[in-house]
Amino acid sequence: MNEESLVVKFLGIPFSITNVVSTLVAMIIVFCVVWYLSRNLALRPKGKQNVLEALIDFTNGIVSANIPGEQGKKFNLFAFVLFLFIFVSNQLGLMIEFIVGGKTIIKSPTSDVMTTLSMALIVLLLSHYFGVKTFGFKGYLVNSYLKPVSFMLPIELIEEFTNFLTLSFRLYGNIFAGEVLLTLIGGVAKSHGLLTGVVMLPIEMIWQGFSVFIGSIQAYVFVTLSMVYISRKVQREA
Image 1 (cartoon, rainbow, N blue to C red):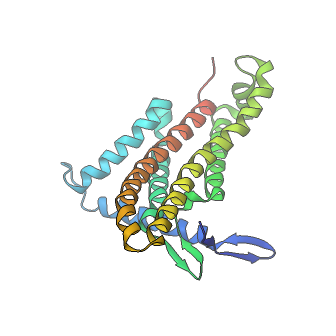
Image 2: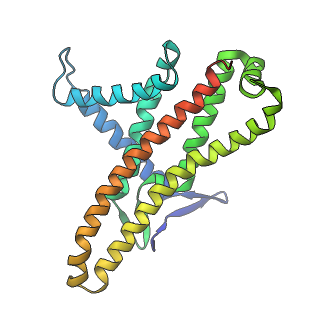
Image 3: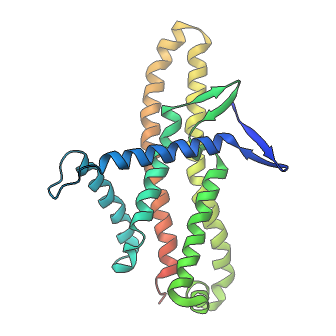
């Protein structure tokens, strides 16, 4: 990709304006979609309310599959918002790409590794927090790292780090690769005028559709793994 993110420095620390703007746009879209779908709710749902309830049931199912019973209900809203945000973020670069002076202002936030690392860190910190809240600090340490056998402690610590990396890099790699390939296809389409444009148009349309599918799957995978990691901290080990 030839375009670069817009980065500014504040007190010597670089900040990506592209990430900030793209994340805000994704958040606004999620808010507007949910606000629209939740207007004029009725006891007998129809139309747009069915869409909202289907989304809620879908994410609630992810939670209940990993954290059954009353304990899992406290994570339903988190899973719902997380899924919608990642889904919209994954698709944003397919819908909108705003470039000024060779600097990208809006793209898919999840095509930047700092965004996915931040989300993975939030998930893992929440898992530790709820683990301590559920068992107390000592009980959390025993349940998470000393069961079923204490000599597994080094492996458990390594696994914490690998979970953080895999959760973030899986999402980033898929979305970034999709946007790079779309950029390459677009470059080829423009390379020799109308001829390459006509040839590459159906290829780009097919890849656009495939990218939407991949973005949806990756949102599902991220939320599912997040619930798996949280469940391991809040459920008692045998």
